[in-house]
Image (tube, rainbow, N blue to C red; front, side, top):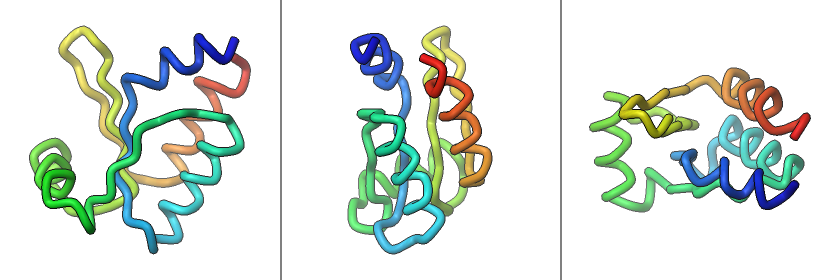
Length: 93
């Protein structure tokens, strides 16, 4: 079961700031759900900052990028929306 979760997690990236309390809440959810989702610090990493601007258009975190694999990308900025999405997608898995 964890192998399936690991595979599904590969399409998701979390752009975040280390000191952001909303980002902390999302990281806690990742930990609670045992999700190995890649995180990128948009404050310290210029590449991550540019990816965040190019993809979402704003320097706001947390930001969840979901590559659907069919050429579509889903973007989420609100921590409550992100946590809800992660719980809905992974909690029952």
